Structure formats: structure tokens, C-alpha cells
Length: 127
Ligand code: FES
Image 1 (cartoon, rainbow, N blue to C red):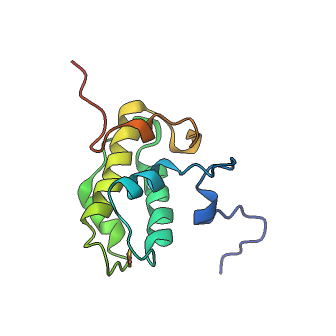
Image 2: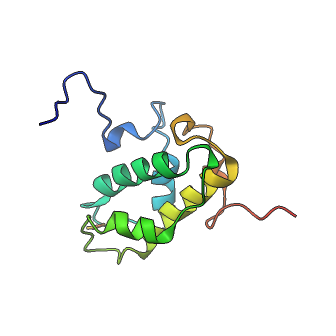
């Protein structure tokens, strides 16, 4: 059995910035842009799982996001509202943006991130 004693535990409330506006984490902002939540029942669990996924897969721009992996990630979550497509789009958008910018997920400053200013679908390709 694992113990949480001494461990740092981050909940979905901890994703947003600790500023006066409680600026959304880029993943939360992407969920908002893509209408990836409705009732919110599933949202906290999916956001936390997706955050871990991004930490593992996009650190250092290691590799591009994999839509099949995102869909497998979601297979453990039940969303009765969205049909999953907007959730996949939101996660893929942030994963692509992180991979393109090379920003480490752990270094995201929600109040300053460029990711939130990127249009849905990620950045424009470089000429
Ligand atoms: S938004 Fe309602 S269950 Fe997912």
C-alpha cells in the first residue's frame, strides 16, 4: 500500500494560477475553448490525468502528441456529456503547443503562457 504521507498532492483547484484572477491552466483554458466540459462531473479527473500525460509525453518537446494515446487515457474516464471529441481536441491542442514551443509542462506559468494565446489547433507552421 502506498502512503501519501509527505507527498505533494495537487488537486484540480491547484492547476489554476495562484493570482487574483485564478488564471486558468492552459489545459483548463483549452477545455473552455473547445467546450470540452458540460456538467463537469468528469472534468477534474480528466484534467488531472491529462496533466500527467502532458508531463510524461511532452517534456522537452520530446515527441509529438499521439491521439491514440489520448483516447486510451480517456478510456478510464466516463463522460456522459461531451462525446469525448472536444476533450481529445483540447488535450491534443495543448500537447501540440507544448511540443512546438518546447516549454516544460512543469514550467508553465499560467498567467504568462503563450499557449493560451494560440489559436485552437496550435501554432501556425513556420515558413
Ligand atoms: S462533462 Fe458531464 S460527464 Fe463529462
